[in-house]
Image 1 (cartoon, rainbow, N blue to C red):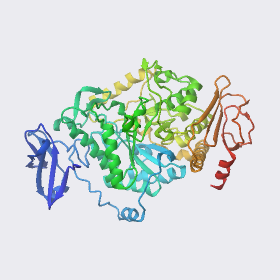
Image 2 (tube, rainbow, N blue to C red):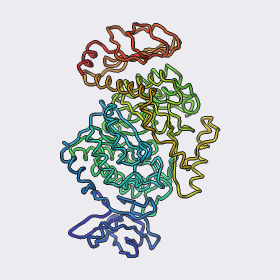
Image 3 (cartoon, one colour):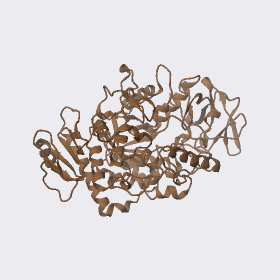
Image 4 (cartoon, rainbow, N blue to C red):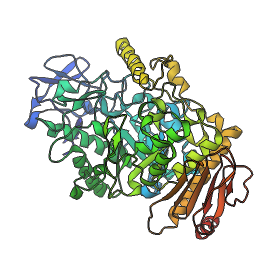
Length: 601
């Protein structure tokens, strides 16, 4: 049974909440209070007149200061304000309803065809709203993106932040717009042919406005995450905690129309029952997909190199659809930037980049000096489309001291090589907002905590974290408004020659990827060849050959046997290559059959 904060039943508004340790419980409307009665399983309930269903309210436990509803659908005044309903059946704009009726039921493209684009609502546009993001969807569709991944939206403290300290899981963050506006953004994505994924955080809650422990045993003190108390997924009363998570997932997918969820840091989800909470969530989402008649995705973020995340239950896995693979990013970043501090020290130049292109997992059980232990296992029975890879994402940019993108660290020929190796890999590529045009705006870590002591602790924690990477300069204060403002994308950059050229390069790479996938045929493992001493690499997959000369001099690069037609060259003007490749150049070749298909498309 899916629990709602309140519902209409026979003309009455039913308010219900789980609070197994409470002695008394009241729902509070301004100065008016109504007592709830205990019912089965630690739940409390009261039936009131129907008009109360739309009124702002809170709950008071044992006569204490009233608190927001743990399942609040709308926190218009933030994490400490009153709770309210969000009736998504009545969209605010008639035009949206009409367009939704005129649009056939949307079905997301399968993961093997996906190009994912991660964005943060607050910095994606100057306005930082759902409505403003909808106006930029044409750009993403033209680029060739298939799936938009939105960073967390559960209400978090303050006006701006990354969203990973959310505390009201069922209520979209009010600074971005209303629940109706969010639902309209999802509809708009679908009209542009874009699936929508939402980043959700089921491993912890933020500290500010986190009142769950007042209501029940949502947390455990047996284990800790790096960000706070761990959720209680396997101790006494954990069935209701699991229901809380599964109902939350169902709400985003069914009520708002999202096509999948990205599960944050599942390595910090501790579940020791026979059925792991991730497996239970995967079963629930598969059942919902059947109920809704459309595919739904669960993608995990994990740094464990653990194929069990995507293995079926029959293989002892959790049955998720895919997971992020960090080794690909780390090997790529280490090779192109030369940085070796922190976890980059575990990666060794071109050999590890080649292994990442071939297997995604670089660490498959060998010793990691950074971790001082063995790490990972071989990705057996893992399909290429079950691994999400990237050259940049919010973490890898924002968790740098100064939020530098690769466009601030590399020259154009290197940026083009990075894009080619990522977008034409056998895995599912992910781009971070602005990456496609080499945005020069940083993406910094920013917060807006009203508690000055919490803000100070966050700033100090950032400085300690960066010490491991040798960044000892003055770190931007996450609490400063300027830190947030500097992170907004500048869409005017697209008109400048450097950015326009890089945008064309990304569009053409995605077009070639689409041609490759449309050609069909049995999936084959990528063939990667390289010479670390000479500084070249070739990557061939499904009739597409990527040739990179990383040396500064022109040199002969041996191509695989067969006939190849040059389709794209990082140098302008493009010339027909032989085996002699200019220094720093990247070329994309197609076999004759694929080249013919590309010309027809």
